[in-house]
Image (cartoon, rainbow, N blue to C red; front, side):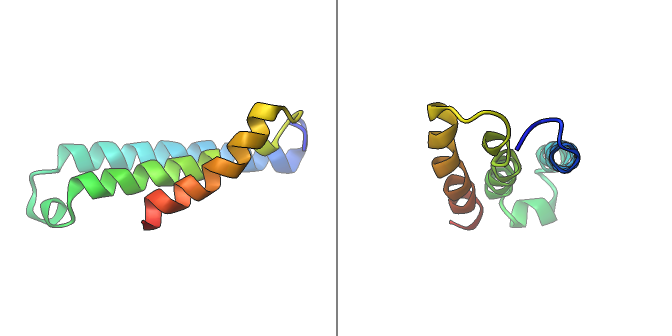
Length: 88
């Protein structure tokens, strides 16, 4: 996969938009952390889930461009780590 492929560009744009939305949700949770609904859902765990979601959106990046040893290592670590943070 190369950076100039239209499908790759579309997925990257969508990933970065969703990362921005996740960051906005994180800010919202941090600001409203004292409200009863957010307090009941544990703001710390909500932020951890958002971090896992951001990592899952970033897990597409190592597959794009020329492969290096670092990218190969990140490919094998990033997706399972994100899954474990979200659901574990």
